Amino acid sequence: MRITLFGATGRMGQLLTQLALDAGHEVTAYARTPGKLRITHPNLSVVAGQLDDDEAILEAVRTADAVIEGVGSESEATRRIITAMNTAGVKRFVVVSTCSVPDPDDLPDAKFKMLVRFVKTAAPRAYAEVRAAAQAVRASDLDWTLVRVAKLNDKAASGNVKVGNYGHGVVGLSVTRADMAAFLLAQVSDGTYVRSAPAISN
Ligand SMILES: NC(=O)c1ccc[n+]([C@@H]2O[C@H](COP(=O)([O-])OP(=O)(O)OC[C@H]3O[C@@H](n4cnc5c(N)ncnc54)[C@H](OP(=O)(O)O)[C@@H]3O)[C@@H](O)[C@H]2O)c1
Image 1 (cartoon, rainbow, N blue to C red):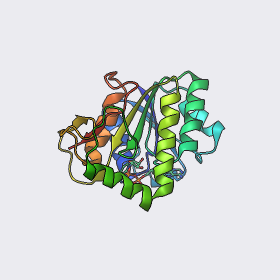
Image 2: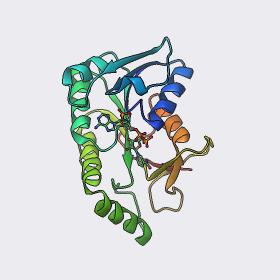
Image 3: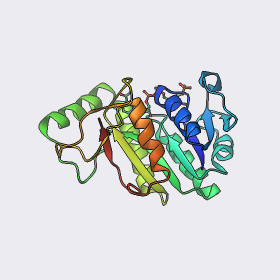
Image 4: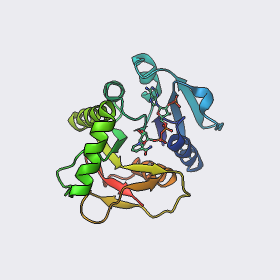
């Protein structure tokens, strides 16, 4: 498949880029700092641009079969990517989200609510942006999946990812970047979580 990645230069993004290439996909990485991408591969191309460059974003997604976004709390960028995907007729959109984004099937306990309140107080802009981004994704006609995580770490891949909703005693708070990258990549060819917002953890 042809996959466009936003956030490919990040810690999780570089793992995802390598995984996608190893799996035989053609990858387009959209990056404001292409020099940070430590990977070279015949199936990897880079489109350089900022997140407000509509022309470059369209160029990056134009021939994609799927787009994965992991740039963090930038709702305007998410809206611009959605617009570009609509223009290009690309449907599959896998988006990194966080535990600050609720889902109707969550059953948050007091400890979880306290964590989200802490995020809201400590990082109000990021909190508001990630929720606004999720709202834009949910309002779109794309085949979207919001992959919600609370805390990433750099331990080795475990291959053991729990998927579900917060508060049901299954999904915890922490996941390795490697396991998250593998989960995101799997979504491009798996419709199980289309138009839903699974939470994941180890
Ligand atoms: N760290 C956590 O515990 C945690 C928890 C929940 C969700 N997340 C999300 O999980 C994803 C991966 O996390 P990570 O810690 O591996 O990420 P990271 O290393 O911080 O990398 C973030 C990526 O997003 C890009 N980016 C961020 N802000 C940008 C902006 N304003 N304009 C253009 N590009 C921008 C970065 O580009 P540059 O390389 O150019 O800076 C980089 O490619 C992110 O979306 C993050 O928000 C993380």
